[in-house]
Image (cartoon, rainbow, N blue to C red):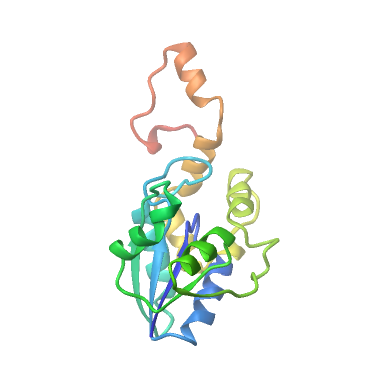
Length: 188
């Protein structure tokens, strides 16, 4: 049996990882849909689809589970969203989600949906982890070690801290200063 699990995975964290572990006990294969794949370089969605593919692929390698990681762009049309997902993914038998809208859309399309309790939701929420990254607070214990490695490799903290600086663009516009050509050009 093949399952489907969608998330933005900004970043992929231990709550997601626990969910994948639970799902792996029920299915032989899992499609992991990366939602909002077209968004990146913002405080809400700092990582690219490719970076999230790296995070997920490395993290789930420890499970005895065939996985397919599929980026899914937002289409902003809920009535056809399930059809969009189905057109982009390998066929699946069951969807896993705790998001009320996602559950409703799959159920309306006649697809079985399984829910599970959230795993340590107070600590393992993407927005909380991203804020900790911005504030230079402890976050590494909230994501798999392989995800820490990816975030460090891509200089994800530096990027997130920069894009969270709401004054950045205004400062460049007001001073006429050129935007940096790369993240390496940013001040530490």
